[in-house]
Image (cartoon, rainbow, N blue to C red; front, top):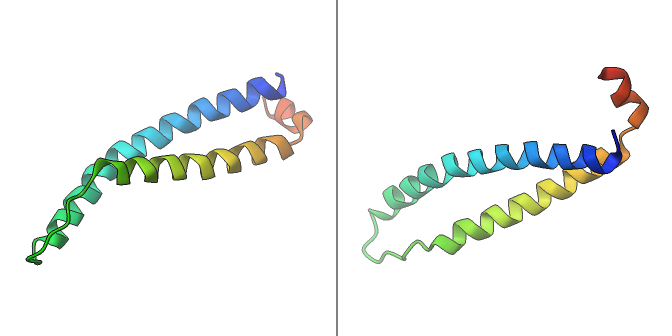
Length: 82
């Protein structure tokens, strides 16, 4: 298995987990923020772009970490495991 193919498989698997966690986290955090703001007279609107920025930043940091881990791994060890 080539290094590019290996990284592609890791990224695909990883992004599925990232999207699933994002789908779970957004409603929970939105509910928590709304409950927190109930006690205040002046409320600020909650925009969708805040969550989009959080997703992009998290994806970038995680992707860089994943690529670094895959690039530093010895291919002979992964072949032994398979």
